[in-house]
Every structure is written in C-alpha cells, then in structure tokens.
Length: 134
Image (cartoon, rainbow, N blue to C red; front, side):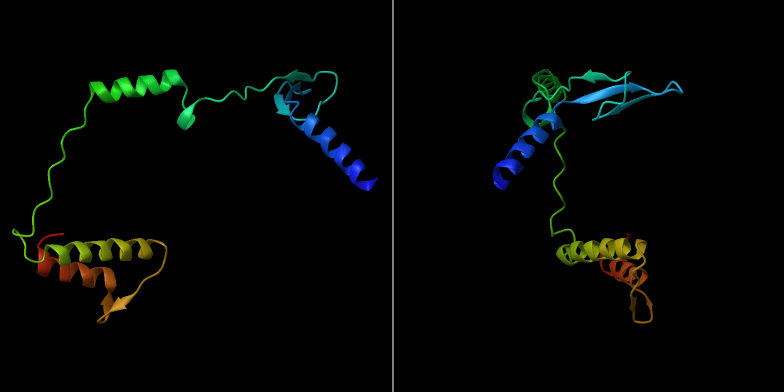
C-alpha cells in the first residue's frame, strides 16, 4: 500500500514538474518567472524543449558554420623547426613546459625555491643559457 502511495505521489509530482513556468507581474511592476503560480496575475507559459540538433546547434546554424569553414579555409600552419637548428630542442621544449607550469603554480600562490632563488627565475635563466631568448 505504501509503495502504491509513493508511486502515485511521484507520478503526480512529475506531471506538475514538467508543466512549465509562470510569468508573474509583481506589484512594483517587475516581471518574474517561476515554477509555481503566483496568484491571479500568473500566466502559464509553454517552454520550448525542442531538440536543437547535434552539438547544440540547429541545422541552419550548423549549415552556416559549415559554409563559413569552406569559404575561409584555415591557413597552413608552419611546421615546427627541426632538431637540427638546436641540438637541445627536446630539452628546451620540456624546460619551457616546466616554466609555464611553475608560473601557473606561482599565480595561485605556490612558490618554490631552487638553488636559493625563485624557481621560475632559475628555470628561465637555464632556458636562456641552453635555448636562447625566452
């Protein structure tokens, strides 16, 4: 019996939950929207829950973006320089990533010291000696 009552209440609640929203005019002239009626001035509204298509876009929006992509092809990106230019290129890339990581940590208040100086400054000096300008 208890299960039937709970089931009935759940069904009734779910039917009213999907009923939509009400547009209410407040005494001070403002308009508010809420799930429950707010008196005589409440006007029920039907909410648009129609699927907009894949990726959250309507077909017309998707078509527009596809047309834009075809009319403005991306420029070919230049290939990265090879290791022949700098024999330490892999080490430089790793060091650069470490510096960026240390800077992000520093921005949130986590600072580390290496050889008696701020790690960001220390690693930038190492990068400059090994790889050239930052």
